[in-house]
Image 1 (spheres, helix red, strand yellow):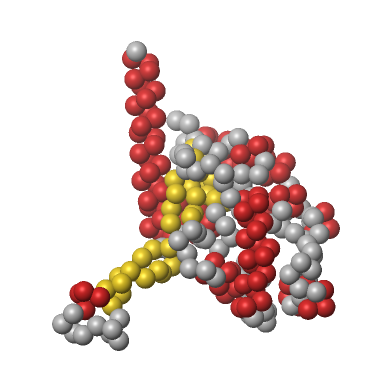
Image 2 (cartoon, rainbow, N blue to C red):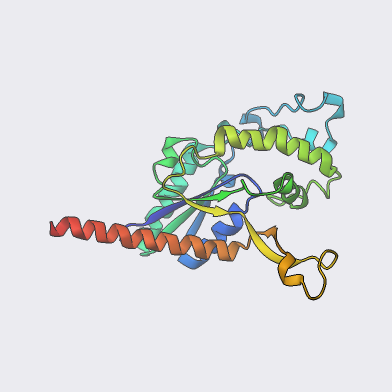
Length: 244
């Protein structure tokens, strides 16, 4: 049985790491994280935020960030390639179904892209403006405190996110072709009733679908179902080809 290599893609803040972990749990798979393949800071491209603020006005917690880790040249692609190949070999020996790859920059280099058999894309197009930035502002990452905890205002972080992080994603991380991808909305819709605008007898008529945070477990289950559908379809196609 061939090992499937599932690449989980999407902008930072969409929940790639959480969905990857849940999907790995369902498949008993290892996760290969691109975040573990960064070059030392002095070997990364230099981060220049002076297109957003004059140098003296850059928030302190952001000014201390010297490496542009949202650029493909910040990754050690040889190491990334070797980690994926090793995880795949282990999965073959242990007769596991899959390996999961989690990276903001997954599609940037053929040396890594060539491993991928399936893409799960977390789509942020239906999110409210600023929601991705708020998620990142409130959460710590790689063992560091959140930017909120480090004293950066949400207004400043949103500007940083929209003028630097998201633009890097569009330039380098956003897949150009989603025709064969499993696309998941990175928000869910929760049915809520507003007591201010509805009388007790008319609540049913004024219910609204409001955005809420994605449930990684549900998203992983949806992804797994679609992956299994693909596997069955491919098996039938191969079997039919042999019969002919």
